[in-house]
Image (tube, rainbow, N blue to C red; front, side, top):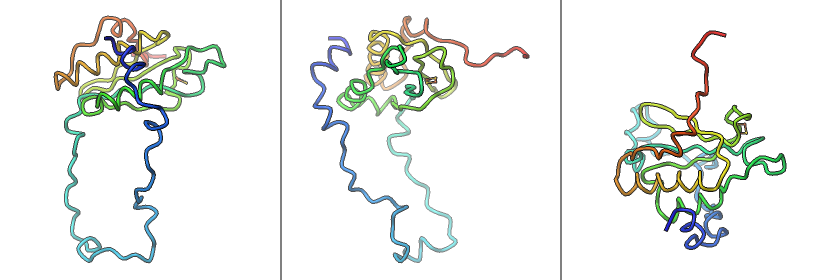
Length: 170
Ligand code: FES
């Protein structure tokens, strides 16, 4: 079963996927009258935070959802954001490949675009015009999760890599 089929057959109701409880307390909303323990308020350097699952992640996919990418009302191809988010959650792909959605990344003329961030480089993909492009992207993320490491980028995605910035002088 390919990733696109999986997303359609096994994804939970979107309302349950996209409406997580918002009951957690944000430290920025903490009452100004609430004092911190002395050990935190002192000049002692803070204890290092655990990077948690971040250390297990190997890459990040940033999908553009700005002024042009995914804007079907501007005759641009759609971006199946809901399906991808549901699939990422269902398959726990975020343990290996972080999925992020961004505002305009800049190269609107290439819409739809995505950025792949690796430890040693960043790749730009575009134009992503068909559902198969996203299905292959999700399939690659599943392969990375299964391997626990970066899998080779599928040929279809390699063909979508473009040079974001010119190396030659203006
Ligand atoms: S909206 Fe995607 S690059 Fe501008």
